Length: 325
Image 1 (cartoon, helix red, strand yellow):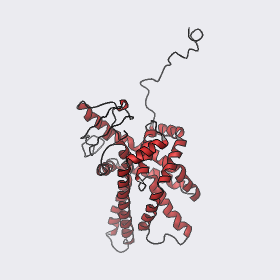
Image 2 (spheres, rainbow, N blue to C red; image 1 turned 60 degrees about the vertical axis):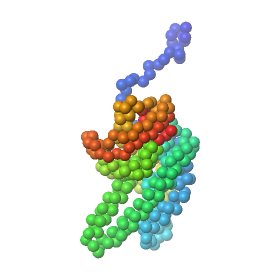
Image 3 (cartoon, helix red, strand yellow; image 1 turned 90 degrees about the vertical axis):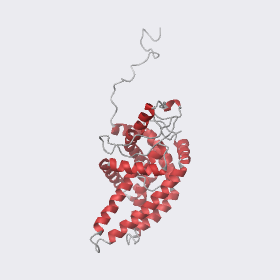
Image 4 (tube, rainbow, N blue to C red; image 1 turned 90 degrees about the horizontal axis):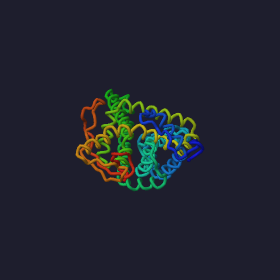
């Protein structure tokens, strides 16, 4: 007889988890993951910062387009303000070294889905796997940033001279906001789907318009958190180097992945399933599909124009088609 009169029998199965247990709220899941993976996120953040050192030069060059004149007569302020901007673009991430961002995004995307990832090996693997596309995205972002910075500075100076400059400045500011929104989705799509850089930007623009108000509110919250962290110069710099980029990456992936799942992954699986082509990715099946269902132009489900995606994976959720394999 196992145990004593049926007690203390550790071979007997427990009650398990109820099938109809409701899912935890997303904020609860986020803070649980942050608590469990805190030291791992620090490790990922430090790897990201190390491999992003080459991008810092481009960022400082880019700020010269935004501030062609000295920012302040105080040397300390003149250095600190561009540093705040550089850190901001690294955390979001709008300007960064693409392969390093891809490696970090893959790990943090898995964490946000409560899936496992190895810090060094997965960072290295997916940074190298997405190196070509990551560098292309990095160069495109830098070029767009310089153009927007030049336009923003030009129309800002023209405000007192031309009446139409107000409208032009508003258009440029809106373009900057949309450009920032697109980066909530660019790198998560890069590490999740086998699609071209052109399709990534196209889909990111669609999601920026599709979820404009949620995206805007989310960006404002992130900006407020970032500015609060940067109130103290020394503490702000230390946080960026150690933890802030990783935490922001986890927040962004937690926010963007449900949208990608709803409009791309689920519709991909639906189309593939109708053709009899769905396979469980956990079993290592090489499943691919093209002609992803069009994303909704509104939450009601009207068709829009999301680019086709195809991928295969041996470690993602059932029926999923990410670019992880």
